[in-house]
Amino acid sequence: MKPASLSKLRALFGDRMQENAPLSGYTAARIGGPADVLVFVHNADELVQAAEKLWEMELPFVLLGGGSNVLVSDRGVRGVVIINRARLLKFNSQAEPPSVTAESGVTPNDIAQRAARLGLAGFEWAASVPGSLGGAIYGNAGAFDGDMAGNLIAVDVFDRQAGRQTWPVERLEYGYRTSLLKRTHPPVILLSAELALRHGDREAIQAKMEQFSAQRHISQPPGASMGSMFKNPAGDTAGRLIEAAGLKGKSIGNATISSQHANFFINTGQTKSSDMRALIDLAQKAVLDQFRIQLELEVEYIGEW
Ligand SMILES: Cc1cc2nc3c(=O)[nH]c(=O)nc-3n(C[C@H](O)[C@H](O)[C@H](O)COP(=O)(O)OP(=O)(O)OC[C@H]3O[C@@H](n4cnc5c(N)ncnc54)[C@H](O)[C@@H]3O)c2cc1C
Image (cartoon, rainbow, N blue to C red; front, side):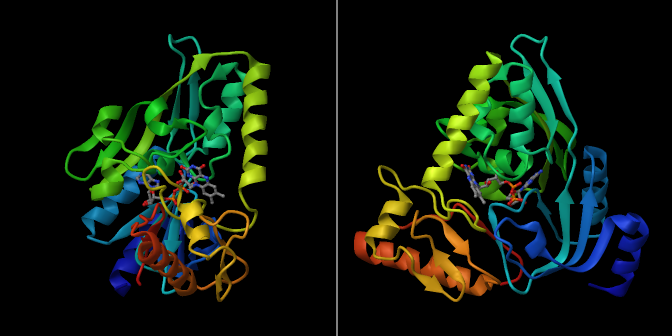
């Protein structure tokens, strides 16, 4: 980055900014080279200001919530990475139906746990989805028969062309683990969202979340990962196909296809992203060669490859 741009960023962000910062500490897989500049935002207004300035300066940037659905390259990110810690949360318990308004850096777990304490149901499925609400809306995260498309009423966005706007859920054109934003990458940032909930019994809500969490512990491997690496193709699962291709337990460097669930790729220690990507390519090729099925990545590549 040009020294003049760096000086301007230092003046703008002060101690909310780090330079040449390794991204491995900001991703669930604990993988990733440095960002030229890392900027932390703590509310929706700071997020808008940061995006506005970076667009004005024509500096490329990537926004990360929990970094739980991305693979960052070893070379890292040229430009700026914004880490979203905008975490304001407000329940509208008296509304009919009840709802919650949350900034995009809130964790789904936080929303689900606090909703449970208020006797508000409907978001139990999200309690154990890592990352931020923004990432979940972007990718239409889902589990246990729930997904963001099912809860989202509307989202406040910051659009480079149109400014701050409220979009009804339909504008995200949701599909399975995808949205308009994920498919087309417009310069649009998710600031906050309103989610529909419903009245329920506190103990029943808590019990449901505990049951989902227990199911996860049985079916998903521990260790640093990005969750499901590939989307499930129609009528099948990526895990079954990778296992049937004989790749369960396969490693390249310290990147390993879990021997418990073959759609989970684990960083077993200081993994290079190039090794993780080589393992992804290997799995994709093996499944294509053996079953004529093209596995589609759920995870996104970020940075300079
Ligand atoms: C152990 C494990 C289990 C998982 N289980 C599930 C599961 O059950 N179901 C599921 O769907 N996923 C699951 N995931 C994947 C991941 O948790 C979700 O995709 C999550 O919603 C990603 O959120 P994030 O904040 O970490 O996104 P990030 O990885 O930080 O970002 C992902 C993408 O979203 C964009 N983005 C993030 N925030 C915003 C914003 N505010 N505005 C615009 N764009 C934004 C980023 O730029 C990036 O392109 C799992 C992951 C792990 C590690």
